[in-house]
Length: 587
Image 1 (cartoon, rainbow, N blue to C red):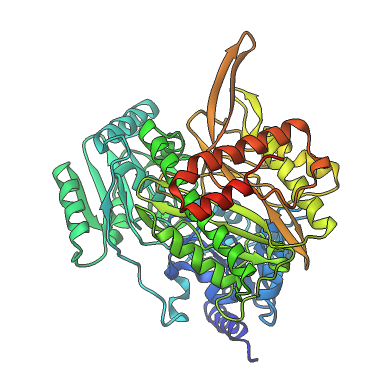
Image 2 (image 1 turned 135 degrees about the vertical axis):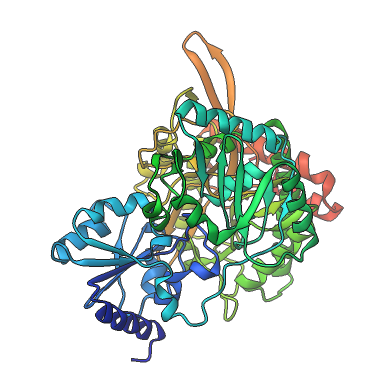
């Protein structure tokens, strides 16, 4: 058995036999329900080699399975080869999720061990009805001998148009309304938003690993993990202390919660099973009210987001110009070269604080994987034919960006051009959408898919996700997808618009902008909302089959490209501005 992951799974099974466990469940999350965990909590990756952002693992004495969704099927099949781990597909009609699978596989009252720190409390309720659950915090510690520590990185303060005092007053009013004595904020994005702080504890996410307990007359931040030597962190902590925030060790959260008396508001989506099991008080369990509050951006945040997209657009246009000219001049450019160059151009932007996720630079077949990982070594070389997909984004002190452009590098096949055009039609149709107040994202998801469906095409991921203000590139509670999320879209929310078409082994296409929900003039039939596109980077028209576009779609496209040129040209070097003028010429 030469596969390192297969060996690790067998070592885990030896532990299971010693402990009399019938199954072990591990998730790809952390104690805070984060989408992107710090290295310490990348347990699924360490055990199986699967690097996708969404994946849960079940190990029994004779089976190892990974549960993940349509975005990662191709990737999982590649990465799990030789490990003995079987892919279990989710978000498909015939899916069998973990609770059902365990119910069909194990005897009643079997012992199922979980790392309670990284299991959502709500998800464990169903399992506890049929099995004996054993919570073992940091379950893998005895096997993962070089496991990273909990990170402690510099923390800074931000001023996003609303003070800490204002936010705490709002939250305390919510507590009073719900009859709660305190709130446990366990989601890292919510803590960063409430305290107006940002950190670097998780790659691509400006979060601080911590817990926050907010009562009527106190705020306890469980954040300390060691000596504080960074001057920015010291200044931030001094400011918070002066405002009455008590700073406590991270590990003290468990004891504080076990001793809490009264009624506690907890976030059902981010409270982990271990902490939940320690609570003896009355709880009100629901989605954190912070999520919706921070999703509706205030005027300062909106101004910052618009600024971020101008700065980001300049970097994108410089990158696309460099890419085209480099290939014209015969330079050998790989996917990794392109990724590095874009990162360098972004880093030159004022207020740049890092990428908002790992850049996806994918040429040809690689682009058929919606969450492709661009290889550092032996990366595919770009050629002057076919399509190149680049999904990327940045964190700025004043906003967060996320953009995908699919670029024709030369001659494209008829099928590539059809897919390119049809997908762009879906993107434009959603961009032009008008909908009544109270409409949820799931109710307009089909607008982006209709051109694809009519042509017998589809995509497995969501059409849109919320985006934070110098926070997570993925945030809720709003989204645009086929799942029945009842959260209405509200003015001030920012959300992505990113339909895609993927053909395994051939090519992938995704067109993505960020859009702002705005209020339109009311009529006697009620209030109406629409979208204002924030992203500024041209769509290449050379791969478009014009006869497939409607007059209104062409009008939108020409107007958008014109706005891109008018906004960005004055900020670009003359030769790039001239190039962009040609690229944005009306069709």
